[in-house]
Amino acid sequence: MTADPAASPFAYPAYRAFFVAKLGSTLAQMLMVIVIGWQVYDLARASMPIREAAFLLGLVGLAQFLPVFLLSLVVGVIADRLDRRHIARAAIALELLCALALGWLAAAGSPLLWPLFAVAMLLGVARAFAAPSLSALAPNLVPTAVLPAAIAWNAIGWQAGAVLGPVLGGLLYDVSPPLPYALAAGLFAAALLALAFIPKVALPPATGATGVESVQQGLRYVRGNPIVFGAISLDMFAVILGGATAMLPIYARDILMVGPQGLGLLRAAPAFGAAMVALWFTQFPLRRQVGIKMFVNVGLFAVATIVFGLSTMLWISVASLVVLGAADMVSVYVRSSLIQLHTPDAMRGRVSSVSMLFVSASNELGEFRAGTMAAAVGAVEATVLGGVLALGITILWARLFPTLRDADRLDVPDHLKAG
Image: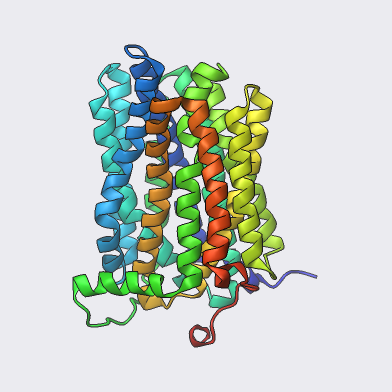
């Protein structure tokens, strides 16, 4: 007996092209992020003590967050009004240029830090445009009934890139600093080519709202939906407080002493755990008690952060990061499903941009929080304290958002099932 091809998102050519573009661009982004962080920290440590270098490492996250903060909500409006394919293509083209610039700087052996921060900001601009447009485009490529499987496969594509990217980045940088950037440029070029095979999709009907009013509509929709708002904000605060990824160069260089190759392994570990969970969800999606399962796993994420912070052995550090990524994937899956299943198409660009703003805040601001706290109290203390605070946020949010905590199923609301 063969499976019904319509039940798989890969039965649809447009989704296949989208998946290739998503995987290629994510792999390239992860290659660049890990190498930029290592370069900044390594250059800084050559001339300053560990705490000052940690602060600069946190600034890398801030440099990437500022453009997202300033642009995301406006980009969401654009994604609901213009062809989402064109927006994604322009953003990936900018990332391609950033990869070429970083490759040139690495080949020239530049000892300067400011070009790395400048390119990090440009990458933030590109991400501000790419993420909402791609997120809003995906639901248009498959029928609603196939969307949960497509969401799980989207997560696998992202996590596969996040697993392979850091490992390849560390290995290639150890061979020659320009190599990871050259590979990233090739992957961005492949993503651009894949986007060319996605046919035009119908734009949602215009609401007649002005630009400012359209932004406000997106914010009001998220704020007025306790399930969506609770899921997004829980993830944001838990990762801001508990995110340990900014500390990985410090752990690799000065605590575990495993170098750039070990850094790649550490950076890939959370994504490996997340990819395994996402793969499981493609066959066995969450069906019942999704709210409480989300909260339990966010709490597990916080505990795994504490274990990682205290570890001085590589295998314990890697294992705790795998568990951390697996737990976080449950939250990502529930949040992404809620947003895409419960949001009308005419609002998806704006709601995706709000979600992107929260996610970017959790990642980049989390890196800034970790870097500045490490500069003040030390890397280990900052990581452990962050995990403790993330656990407290999880308990508090379970009380503040009982509707999310008690959510049972990831159902498509009746008013969105038609069409």
